Image (cartoon, rainbow, N blue to C red; front, side, top):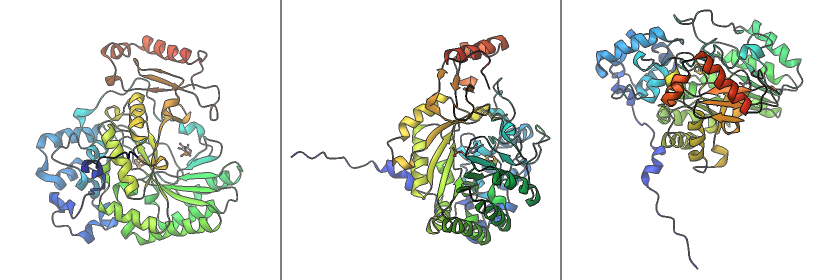
Length: 454
Ligand SMILES: *Cc1c(COP(=O)(O)O)cnc(C)c1O
Ligand code: SF4
């Protein structure tokens, strides 16, 4: 009998297991004398976070040429989102290649890389405000709702979908939308959830639940678990990706989360953590140790990635990210198309990029660890499988989606970044009349009546 012999694997394909080791932060001038106990202290991480170009200069000093600081200073000035970067992230950036580095691209704006926004971009592109019955609650899907109890995060992502509400006002954006931010204001959201028997699934997001004091975490968990029809809670936090040491050193926070998970389990309800890793470079030995603590406590962690140009938009990087996440006990759940957000056009990719990447990732590992590639349809259509477009005009970069169970009869459009289109298409997008024509054609080809746009 013939046996199929599988050749030995190329060791490079196992490189996702090589996590950053040791005291890697000491390569940063300001952290050269920082010992492990200090670097792992979440309070130190919070205090040392960088919010201005001057603080960046004081921290990395001569690791980059002065021209980079000028570029960053102008980038900070023009950013719609406040800047806040943890020492953990600063130490994870390859400062030999600051322009290409995937972590720098996500958190530190540089003016020279900015592109014009897409003409069809609107503030709050997901129209979350339209689905908000009380401040701090978004009820778009039938059985699930998003509760936003605060508007701060341990770091600020340049591409944040909720830049309309999250973080302090900036020069570019003042008057951010109001969320409910105190336990008194939260009562309205709890009362609404209690009054809607169809709500089984509550996402507690923000902002970021890392920022909630342990007592507040417990208060929210208890209030929601006490509602009989609520079956599932998810606490959403970017924390593990940007400040994993908090899980190891903020014992009160980690214990409060553990208590809610255990209380939920005793009453037959699922309580999990949702997090947000985008680059394999965000995962170090510290992340592995922190995720191990959660794993040992039986806390399930799912990950939602944003597909970002120059960060994770090639097959090798995305596959490494997925494999490295599962290696540290985190389950890849979604990869999102980058939303149409102000001031970050250079970070978006096309729908075609997502379709191509999915093909490479599927088959690379277990099906349950293979993320779904999603487009959260601008205009409030909700999450759609990227492949499920009714029509995709690749030439002009317009994908049309419908969402029968969320907004029946409506059509939703995603626009590819214009700089990735052909020159002829780029010229067409300069004409407002042709823009309307291209959009109308795409809807007509999807079988939609004119004016069916949400
Ligand atoms: C993403 C989201 C949810 C949760 O959706 P899942 O697909 O179940 O992860 C709930 N409400 C809103 C408004 C959302 O955007
Ligand atoms: S952590 Fe989430 S909510 Fe906070 S800035 Fe980043 S994407 Fe926005």
